[in-house]
Length: 224
Image (cartoon, rainbow, N blue to C red; front, side, top):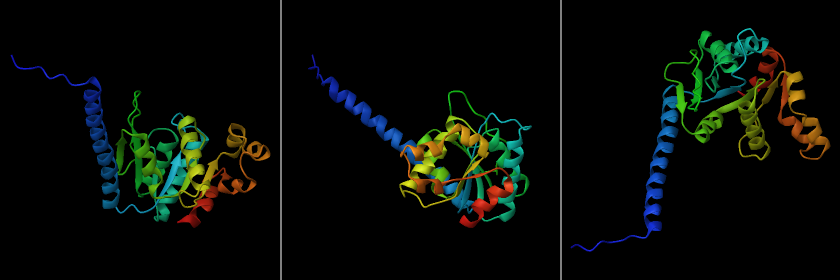
């Protein structure tokens, strides 16, 4: 009878974990280079990132502001309009850019409760990411400004990550615009953070408020 070779359990689990790590590395690389190649092919060099709630209806005043702003970005032509690709505010901004003939990019994310991409995305520039980290990387890789409309956890996540990266000088300074001053002042008391010494007074210069598409455009156009 052939001798049975018994391998230590730890060795087997290490080999399995290594194979899983290799597979994950391959998926990460493919997801990064797929988006990178397609944007290079379309000549996307600069983007303006727009974030906001998926729950905003077409009758909401912020929908109209986001749509008008998207149209302004497209009319200028120096940057592509980029969003998370979903409904609500993102649809509105993409719609404005798409209808005005500009590049309209959507970086969707695969979630347990699937979020459908909106239909106002330039063919070939609609992406579906598995990994949040790579999606976030592509959000900011070409961004010249970040515009945050009223939103929930996802909007807060992108907003505060961008503020942190600019504050820590990990990315180049860019306009960060909070649309809906009344909303943002109630949702996040940034003046309280200054008063408590949690952020510096100078950090107030990292962001600004706006309420109309014209005000947003004035805040971001110089960055282009």
